[in-house]
View 1 (cartoon, one colour):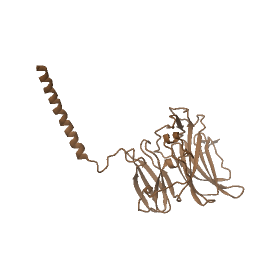
View 2 (cartoon, one colour):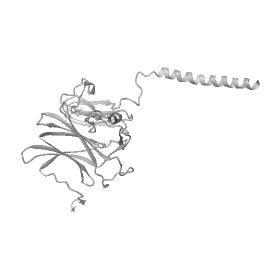
View 3 (cartoon, helix red, strand yellow):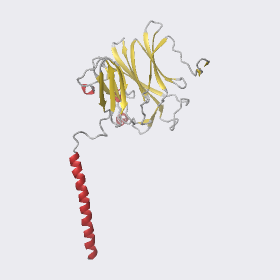
View 4 (tube, rainbow, N blue to C red):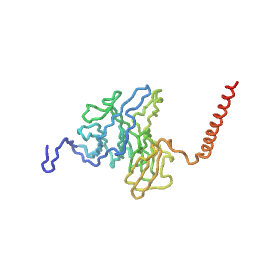
Length: 305
């Protein structure tokens, strides 16, 4: 199909029957993927499906039984192929979505059980990588999908993922909740690969056992005692330090802070004893010259004997 008025050619089309598109999400432009795979407990590698052309489409509708539903689709914008499709009945929008690396996390309100829930899905190529040097949407890859659902303790106003310069640091999910808190939750709690029963290989890999409830303690609140209300969005940006990501939440209130998903591993603490290190370095330098001088004298005396 070719439109003469615009000079554009239609490449693909997706029809959502009896559904209305309410939002479209993409990965952050600053999103970095450091590792192409996950090392399993048996030392094999599970390769990630890191398609940079994926978008998440959220739709809503009413089925033939007059039951409202929400659907989430992962589409390849180059080929139009469908990579993931989830439908949830008796679910109320808004649906908040974050898309990063090879995974997606989205939240919604379950009207049937009257609670807020989150679903996470990860996409993998498998234990063999199709093309290690480059990625193409035309490669015949059907990703293996793993998903888990979780129960949230609070409602969600906005959601975002931390991002760092090289993507080495662990990821955290930042959530803004209606009571004014900004919560930092490690991605490992949303990991869909969390097993129901831990094995020795799971422990070797560092996985934690699956429980449906996401437990949040007050140490995870990054705005401390400062309440920020009616947050409409969260923006995260990397910094020059790999350990640090900055978070900006905006709405009725605004809040800006730093977070350290893997702790502060590339910066000295404020109470670091620079004086002790300085004098120790000077002592080692002076000591090396003295030792060198004594060694030369010793060699000279030894030669005259």
